[in-house]
Image (cartoon, rainbow, N blue to C red; front, side, top):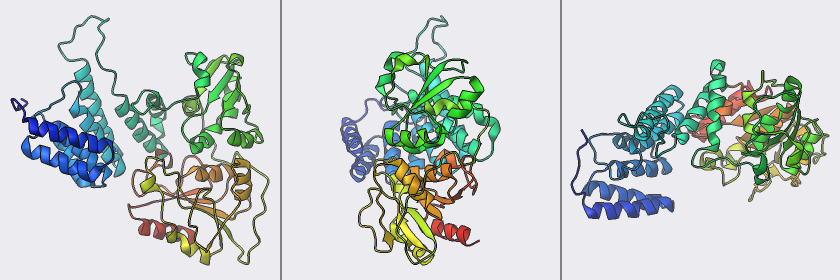
Length: 430
């Protein structure tokens, strides 16, 4: 039985609301103080849930897990009963397990969260009428998180879960921070391609450039397998590169010319195999002739807008040892304060130019950015450094090899850049 506080102390509610505002404004230190103060006055699952989110943002993982666990308790008063605090807490516990690389435990938490949510949406005493409509949608965020967890298992070698993972991946269009495709497709949004043969299909770009490069490999395979004509809608600069490699990417898309639309991230539901051999190429772009024989491309940071950039980007100083091996060239287009041992290149806003530069390098060292995907797609020897926390599902867990690119070696990061660089050195010097 839930222990109720009747009525809950108004001061605790006021302080809790101030904490929520601080959390919303990303003032995490202030939010922590306010939520803890509210909990001292009156313990609520709401405050525990938000305190757990605050601790997560502050990288206080142990405290975050403890707070989320408290939020699952039936013995602590819940202020907002319009949705399931308990389900949200289980979802967050799943995320914390995912960060630690404990995929089986993460899925267990996600399933608990989904079950709690469904109980809230369709309680045991709900009308049995088939036309009964519930007040809340499915727990799409939790279903999406479960998808990425299952797909990381797939990318680690558990291929039997391929269909389950990609089917759940469709929840990216329903979750709270939903994935979007270009609004030009609004008029045919209801005509989603489901494997029909002998038709014209436009594939719409979505997510980041790296995703577009990774999934674009499947366009020729789908055309042959289903006898369809496919045009891919992507950024013009990337489209120019893909066009030169036999993947049709028109500059302008007229939706009246197509029978169906397919979001690019959905192609894996219809493919039969993954060919990890190179599928992109470019003419070499000359780079400065320098004394040392090896030419090394380096990417140490990605876009600051990336949700995990604080764990993904690495201080450039960690890579100085590369300058003892060869000539180091920056592949960071927006990098500032480039050290003297890193050579600058003309990285114009052209993926053909970037591909040409990669063609002139001996190998690439990069954090997890779109350059990793481009280099892998071209067959360039590449070392990809995993983020300190929360690795992308595409690289799997604890693998040097990966499912997508035969030339890419994945460097594990035990939540410590120094140890990650040591892993890189060991792999390079073998």
